[in-house]
Amino acid sequence: MFINRPKCGEFQVRFDMKYSGICHSDCTCGFNLLGAQKYPFVSGHEMCGVVTEVGPKVTKVKVGEWVGVGVLQDCCMDCKGCNNDEENYCRNSAVHAYGANKD
Image 1 (tube, rainbow, N blue to C red):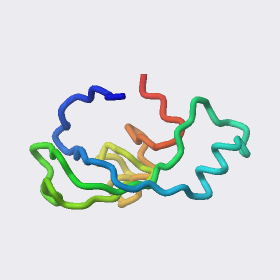
Image 2 (tube, rainbow, N blue to C red):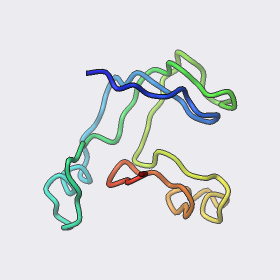
Image 3 (cartoon, helix red, strand yellow):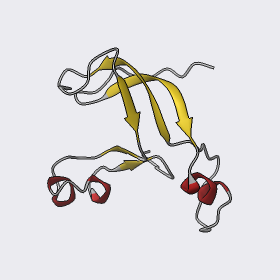
């Protein structure tokens, strides 16, 4: 199955995923141990692969290099949390691998 994706945004990177890990958080969410999991659920949020496309403002990664991705997928880079190198506390546009609802 092919999922049609838009081109990379200014600071985004697209990559061909090669490996994905399953961690304790995946098990916790998969078994709904906290009682708040939404389904369907896709586990394996920690992944790595080879970059296939970069946005025009990406400076630290090039096509062909390996990258790794954790649970935090995106943030605004402009709020108090982001300015303190605590993107996981972004209040504006944090996108996490679990339960994100960006309708």
